[in-house]
Image (cartoon, rainbow, N blue to C red):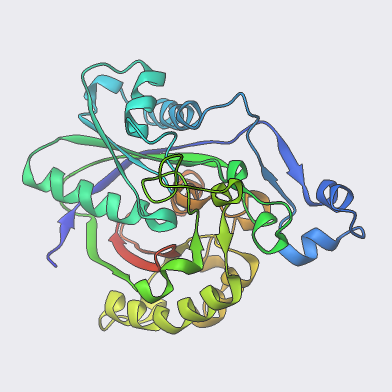
Length: 325
């Protein structure tokens, strides 16, 4: 692919007020003190109260981005929303976010690629900006994973947190942008990570069970398959570059084991990787843009540097993006 100029103007973040500590879950699950943190690698994460909607949390992250960047909402031409699970079947979650913001007359739609959806959204935005269709685009990602957790399943229930993050981009002066984008699906693993109900396959008409609304994951098989295909993605993404040629690695915060594997596989030092997993957990689609927000707001997003963004997702989908700042 050819180089696509893209400039990051601002980022924003929003977390539910409720903090769930691993110590609290030890007590709730009747486990010894320290069990949940040792098993999940999480100190605490945020879970939304039932009164908080997905679209409102997403709207908060967009307001935060606009405030941080001094950006007028009227200067944004398009909202691309990313989520693993939508607020409802129809209309798209982007419409609900625009309603929560009160932004009238703006285009908006959803992209769903589960945990890596933010990466194709960035590529999509860059292509639209460089085609001249739009001048400035907001990308928002939000998931409330806590709404689909089966607390009888330790493997999945202990690793997730809720959150939202946003990024506002434009074409810029052409000095920085997306050097390479790679995404591949491996559908032999499509059943290893899923929520069966909520669409046309399992519903009130076609038939369903209450447990079909819970998140289901076969962690060991999913980790093994992801580990098998990740080297292929990295080789194609780097295309002659080395791991060390990337100044910072922004990776999907999938799990404690997943983060350890990425660090070992990449062979990078801690200062080249941002790890927010212990205090956020796996935030599904919001994970990667939240890590980007951390990089951007702490000064680690430096002009002239090269950033790599990588993640795996349900599907099985694996994606990577090289962004030259």
